[in-house]
Length: 191
Image (cartoon, rainbow, N blue to C red):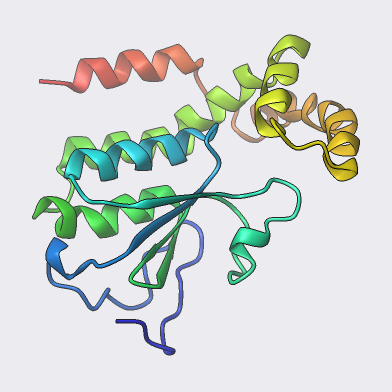
């Protein structure tokens, strides 16, 4: 049940208090606030689907973020479990794995989750914003069906902002490998 004392976690941090649920059957409403083009959101959709847990998906408007107006955390994914908010895909999986699968993530799974969210995602963003064609495809998908003036304006400006993303990521993470290297590492860990 929902409680007013609940405090959501900060990015990269575990929950400040445990969820008040003991098992999957205690979950009455699971909502994923997402962007369909976000790899962490895609990972969570697969995680929930594989567990057989019903969940709702709410697409968060890139510009207004009105769907997550309840939150001070303004990134996706955000998950609410019976109304209790959890942020950051890595923390979401780590927290919900015992409830949905009856066990915590294995060492291999924990490594993969951590590498996916902290390295592979950044490598993917470099590739996603490396060429004008990729930027155009991402913008078309992100604003698909939105003919508002604000969306038109952002479609014009966004490419200029995201062109600097690859260099900024490389500067902040000089040891980052190409995206495909993380895929090969993932495949090598599969028994």
